[in-house]
Length: 432
Picture 1 (cartoon, rainbow, N blue to C red):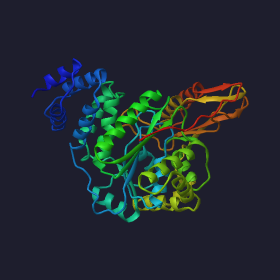
Picture 2: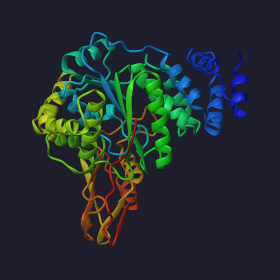
Picture 3: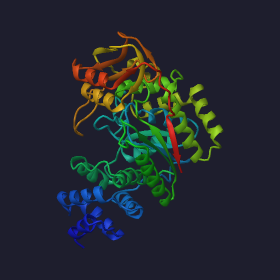
């Protein structure tokens, strides 16, 4: 079998058979196929697409390129949630403690942020001392003893995905639905959870800009999960504006903690409760009403906050931060962004605000960039709020006292008009 023939078949709009797909994934992982040939194939896939069968086979090949986790010694139903990425998306820090406090076992691997979208691992590591680089033995032990553990992606799980994603990132082939689906599900299936809920973002701050594309991605991911024998569903959620009121690592942790303490509301809380209920439903907890009620109660009675604190302590973090978020780092310098006119906030562009956060130092342009964990933005006004000229619409934080670019992006991303806009739903569709 020749890689040349595989590339040519896909370039000409043909369909790859299972053997061809497994061959290129394994040989590339083993270092026997050069980057330039795989890059050519990725570009052919970008333009010609893949059938459902091809995408499923590619996913399973990525899953099988390394180890698969064995949780036979860890009791309970295991569940995971995966978000396709957004601005201000700190839902894992609230959702996973909620479901874990209700008896679901959470052994979750999460990624770091790249570009204007943040990563759960970066957020967690803004808690002093907390380790996300645990070995598999520690991972299983904490998941078993605490019921909740969140770590960084393991190099031995789905190694083909790491190689393929790095190549996609530099060849402009990231936003291909078959390649996104196989990347997401290859890692999820290698982690081998019983139940998986996907949070597929759509809007300016997401990879999927249209509802049709988000739906297509959700449907193929759910189909792949079912083919692998998993209980799986997807929620399509709005990412046209930042989620919650904070963007940036330590700022988002603080907001997540305040949410677990019952001190916040709005779109972020609504989504966290909805995702928690979806996981509980898949895990056999009961009907929608019972699951929603249980998720709300876990916040109200403090059990979700306590579960999060136990996880933080077990992973070496300073649990005092969970009970006193003021201990979390915040940028030494700040600047207030002032409204130049009066009216209603018509829209807050998630991508622009994400880019502003990146300019403050809170994100990465390259995977090895250092990030400023205290940098970020607190939104003082969001869509639908009344604002007067001279009022603060956002506060910027950074440790490097450079704000001009970020301020311009925030101003460009904030639309003020005369009429109050209507609020849409945060959860747009459910795919099963």
